[in-house]
Image (tube, rainbow, N blue to C red; front, side):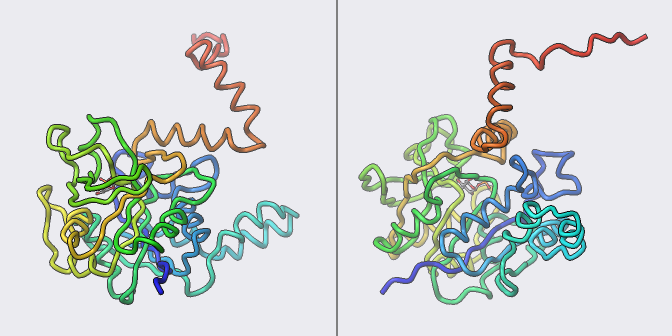
Length: 303
Ligand code: G1P
């Protein structure tokens, strides 16, 4: 009997240079979408998909993430003394059980494959999920859950995939497709960030993976790719032939929160889904759509 992954790795060691100065002292994974940090969306997705063990691969300057998922005794006291039950529930319900979370330092930023490899000693000989918080997915059924359902049939390695515009292939791991039923695509190869002219398809890997233990064996070789980094895409590609690789076209909407426009759009989209914000946001958006501007300023003049 195939067993679903019960452990998830969250690589959160990246510097977040695209969001400087906001990310100078704050991890990019703590940037909020409405009122919840990006990393919490990823953790909730994993939890709702049945994940029981959460491994964060962190780096310097990332302690805010540990604090976020820790019990805040003082804050809780203040909230309960003030009768702020809703807020108290918001900070309590997100906590994981003691011992469910582990933090590992990636001492040097040597690539996504290297980050995943840093967690090797905490993983048994079993499949593991990897979630990149930058890729935020709005879905009725959590994206990872959809992948686990597919995995129970296919086994092997699975990544979430979607078609991107031809000029965008150099931002993603791209599948060299051998068969495709419109939902699951099987790959005979993978290429990390190819130029559009060299891309074998436009089917791109989005930051959700289920990895077969064979990938960790490949990562043990510590081979750097053409960009000088140890790539997860390359390690998965080297297992093809021994281990099947599938891309799942997940049902849902993906926001690239590693880019400013994607991050801003995610804030709008998630706010529109909220009953407490929907009306205000619609009014504001309508005004921007009509005028293309922030609206009249105060009218006061500067002497
Ligand atoms: C990483 C992976 C890439 C994947 C992407 C998804 O790239 O290396 O294969 O398509 O995540 O977001 P990064 O965005 O970290 O450069």
